[in-house]
Image 1 (cartoon, one colour):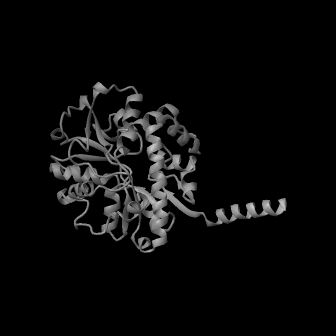
Image 2 (image 1 turned 120 degrees about the vertical axis):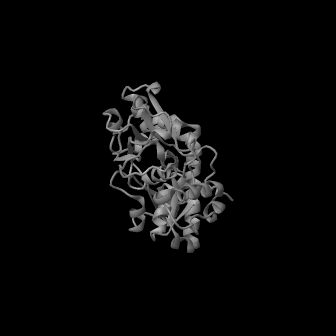
Image 3 (image 1 turned 30 degrees about the vertical axis):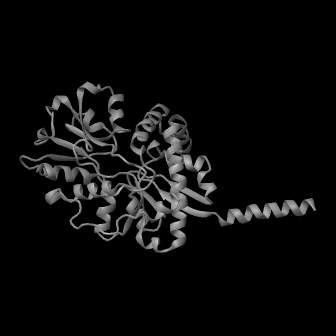
Length: 326
């Protein structure tokens, strides 16, 4: 009888494992505290509690989330809305199903010695910009300022910035792109004091766009089973994000444990988590339509450098978060 009971229990566990729903998440960048909520949800068993078997794929300089999901390599991706909407206008039907990041952390960080005190001083300067989808908010901003980005007289010269701060340190550019939670602190750690820098935060300049949202392919949302799976995923992920906000040092430690490269530093990740928590604060996962409309307006207002030219339709939905938040 005891053997039968053990066998039945084991059979039940195996059946439960077999029923686990596989979900693959593609991150926008490498394993770091920017994505802490997902790693916390995995580590703390929040996904498992929802019956999910989640695989988290790190990104990198040669990984474009839009290309990964288009090729069927992921069920859901983390991306910035400018990139997602630009891809949608080109024919890749991405839909935002959740928005864990409420605020933007993008900025331009400039050396004071360059003479830049306001955006009006950008003309004639070299500015470092990330590409691979991250250039869209910048191009939109320059369009609003009336500054050409081809290096012509009266415009700016764009330096295709790698994912480091070397152009500023080596004075190859007057300004570089930084995130409040990452590259800005790399500049500080390199020995340049905050007093020697001028920061232009996209939010403060009125050109901020939504970052780090969750996107899926539109046709998948026609399947109620997929919607239910994504609701479970979003619910567990947001549980992970709120835990990370309340326990930033522990969350940073979990990120480090999941970094197979061993390249991340504990001090930097803890500091990053503290800054990222400021950006996820206030979000329950559901996209705020007002934030979406602000993003679209910004992306369409860049003149010849406008990121999108047609008002998007169906680019976001509450169907997943409505179910997740029940």
